[in-house]
Length: 227
Image 1 (cartoon, rainbow, N blue to C red):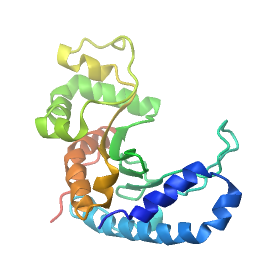
Image 2: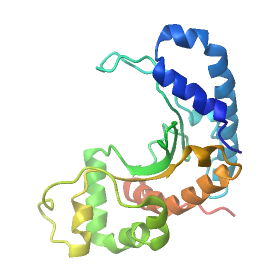
Image 3: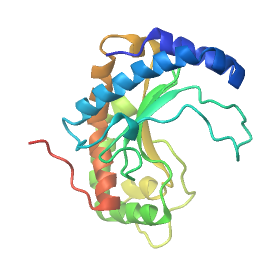
């Protein structure tokens, strides 16, 4: 299954005319495109169930609203200009590090995941795990196949190694991480191609060991193994 060109066209127009008046006039188009995207979410739940525990996870547990909360934002545009969904055991509100799918025209679409907004406790647990077991993390995110798909790490860094750590030089940059996430971008042409879902799931399977590392660190969660 692929993303329809009409969905990308709708999002492009929404970006140009991000107003309640325009949206009201084009609400039928939105509902049609959203229904197609919801179908993709349902398919992906089944695809992810091959290597993640998706028992009980429904479309509503994965999708995000298009409407923006503008109460505390300087940007008063009422709508997001992308469609998105997250996939993990228990759904997007479970707290687990998940697979985030972002669909936005102009080459801004991606599948990503990782430590984007960790709590202080999660950050402390992550650094302790890197101190003990940095070679495992490096083996995942520095492997040639992972780097080919996801490139370099993204996120903010401390200027210096946190106090209390005397790391292996190879782990020093990971200990300085305040955020650690990766994403694989898709071109608009890839989105609309018949093999988009296959490419998406290939990227997800390469991302899985990294997310397993974080979930084991934060939640003492063992990787899900499909019988």
